[in-house]
Length: 172
Ligand code: HEM
Ligand code: HEM
Image 1 (cartoon, protein in one colour):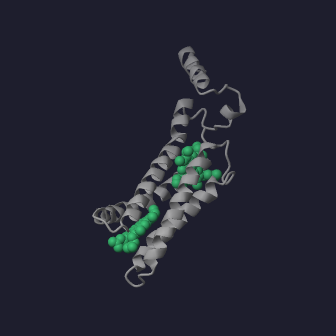
Image 2 (cartoon, protein in one colour):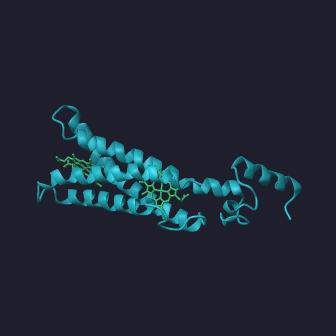
Image 3 (cartoon, helix red, strand yellow):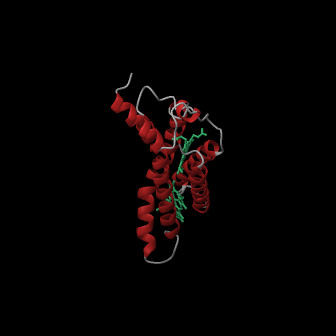
């Protein structure tokens, strides 16, 4: 039996987040009893925050990659930045897909995997960007791949932006 103070704190938290104790949304969170409601809400937001930062990093990496193609003084620095940060953008994409999937399975019992396009688009974006990265390994052997690489990269970033829009409807 929770203490009176703790009980009113929980009720206040549920009101703050527009949840009513006993409502399906509250009950289906599944984490109740193991951790307070606020804790659940905070953990469930970890993935959307990582996802948003990932999309911003991917757009930055893409802009440096495209600038590196220009024939002006900024191209050299842009290419250096692109080479340094592109693998981190790819790692962040993979991390986003893993945290999103884990968050859906372990935290969001009100969601099931693949309920929306967010699952398919997310993992497709990861595969597409991995292909862009892998292609760079063969640049010296086959220079024509230098023309294919940016297209794969741009498509993967476009998918990541769509992903952010699709993610909004899944927010807790
Ligand atoms: C490129 C970046 C991202 C990737 C690769 C990604 C990937 C995923 C995946 C694979 C899932 C499981 C979905 C399912 O089974 O239906 C998921 C869940 C989810 N995603 Fe993303 N996502 C990204 C960005 C975002 C962003 C920017 C937002 C916020 C607007 C977001 C919000 C969510 C939410 C709310 C869930 C449900 C799980 C939870 O509440 O934590 N995602 N994501
Ligand atoms: C995000 C979208 C991306 C775009 C738009 C993009 C674009 C470009 C462009 C235009 C170039 C110059 C190609 C040339 O030599 O003419 C380039 C080079 C390169 N990119 Fe990307 N790229 C992207 C993603 C990636 C990813 C994910 C990786 C690795 C994980 C990567 C690694 C590289 C490397 C190593 C080079 C070679 C630089 C050099 O030869 O000095 N890029 N990219």
